[in-house]
Length: 159
Image 1 (tube, one colour):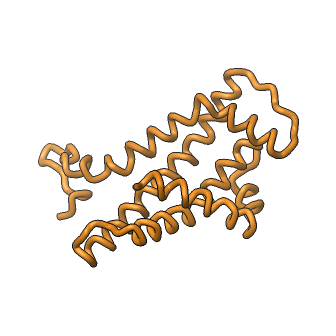
Image 2: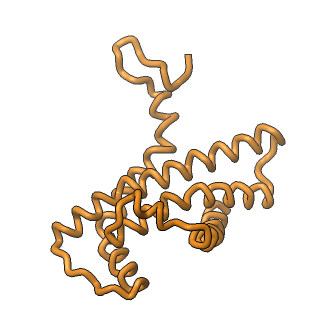
């Protein structure tokens, strides 16, 4: 029986279950919650970058918008964690050795490329766009521009 489907006789999930999902869910939840307080800063940044007026918002409006953006960031972190761990496992199973620098770079590039849509949605939320509209505004040039920047950040973060 897999650790994800196993449970104790009393119906409580086994500790193996929590040990399996905790490395994925804890960073995602923490990241989602952490974006709420500074979210207005992201809104201001987007307004300045697009030469739009900086919106005046009450504390409750800022909190509401931050809460709407939190699941997007949490999903992005969860996706990055899953892809990074899967890539690391594939390389390490094949070689039975830790990742080399080129393998780390390839892993970081893959994670960054898969994160672009979630990043576009998050950035769109800072300008008041829906997820659907944000993805429509994600065009090849924007994706190509954001991926190398994200890739370099993620690569250095994982070193």
